[in-house]
Length: 188
Image (cartoon, rainbow, N blue to C red):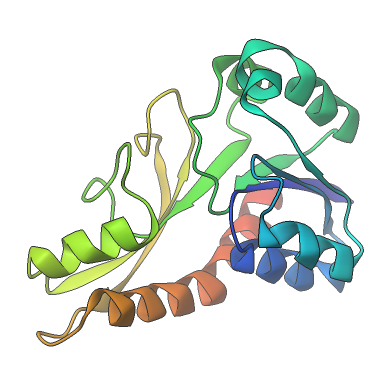
């Protein structure tokens, strides 16, 4: 049984989707969710779904090995960033090479980098009158949104779409594709 640890910062809709997807599978399971936000809604979702969840602060993440030690104890086959906003520290990337993946709400390399997350991305897509956007699942490296691309899916941006319309389309793509991409990565 493959083991997944999820990192999330906010509401946790992608985390919940992954947890539910793997609940009925016999090949993988989400063993833990970690968050940098002690008030994140993802913690409530995990309680409801009976998945272990912990919050941590910046010191535990970047200045000590506390989070790394939690991960070592969990022995994940894959670490999945699902709406996690902090840059990942080198000590964790070194300990889990090619085992940390992220989902980004745009077609990278467009609209990636520091500060480009959530509605910021969708507003930029609309402001630049893009005709399409999408999602990118990629490996995490030491730079925001620059790791090797694993998977992309796109959708149309209609001329009258607002950022909220784009967000809804992206959410649909994430729900449909992210768990399947994670499962495929685990089966390699």
